[in-house]
Amino acid sequence: MDREKNVLTIPAYPAARAVAPRIAAYFSAYQPAPDAAAVEAMIDAAFWASLRREEGVIPQISLAFVAPEHAANPLLFARPLPVESGALAKLAPAVERPGIHLGVSSSEQGLRVWGTTRHLPAHCFVIEVVTSGLLVIKQRSELMGKFVNVAVLEGDQVKFVDERSALVPDCPGVLQSLLGLDPQTAPRSDADGINMLVQLAASMRSHGRGGALLVTPVDSFTWLESTVFPALYALNPAFTGLSELIRQKGDADDLRHAVEGVAGLTAVDGAMVMNDAYDVLAFGVKINRRRGSANVERISLTEPIEGSAPTIVTPGQLGGTRHLSAAQFVHDQQDSIALVASQDGRFTIFRWSMTEEMVHAHRVEALLL
Image (tube, rainbow, N blue to C red; front, side, top):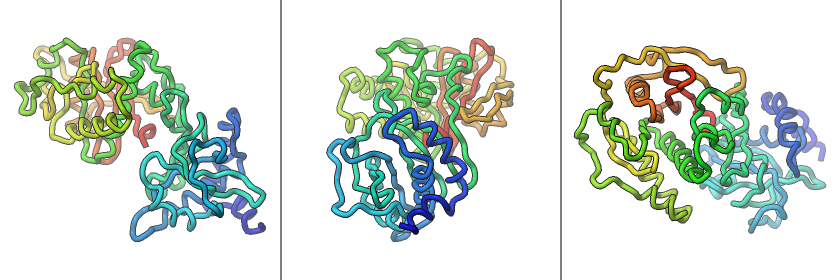
């Protein structure tokens, strides 16, 4: 018991103690919620587990503070385990697949891992180990059952997500959805489509090759004026697999496989073009400046992180050719948006802001971890 008290009150990971009171206060509006000591202990154990190796593999785990009676169809251990880095690392191979969470709750013996679950209540406190030293604090949103990032801890760096970022001029619906808000820029009937774009963004980032996705209005072909066409990988007819699954409210596994397949097309050199009905029109497309259009020279840049101030930058400050061409495309095709993933994990959404009268770049990688 004395050893467990030490784990709860004297963490070896300094950031755990620094952020625990604020995170506990954030989740205190929802019940049941962990207190600061429990938050501290869970973050500490998850961090040190992330630095271990099991058969040479970095543990990837998700810890959820939830009682077994609040988790649907839980897998229960006969003997609950301590919330300790070694125990978590050893369990990692069994729970590394997406959607599986290790359930943690308080007991007379202190915090214990009681088993696993795939189903969590809304606003549940979750810690996900992404890679060595990189943790994400999440909650399960009521909006379409998504998980929404609250904070990102990487070593001694802590970033808190700022939901007020949704108030920036002409905020894209996909960003509002990533923040766990109802997209206000699209009809309610488009909610599934907005969520699909979020899934595409996450999948684009995860394949690690970098890529660009251009989303254009349905029944509009002005995007051809900003690309080299005919494209090597133009589609005829357009691929309607995603749009059909959205309309038919298809099976979750079918949707996931379709998203992965489509997102994989963005890894090909060039950009993928999709209309806002989610039909894929082409991929490997080269972007050109529209005839008669000026070069994009100034871009408004924001990031949905507390303490991050809006800045005006040049396209070259955002990245390489992929970022420059995407910014130029949105500058010339102001009713379109562009999503760009970098090989280093950065992710940017470009949209024309009528309020600012310039291209606005939203850096959102912290929301996609």
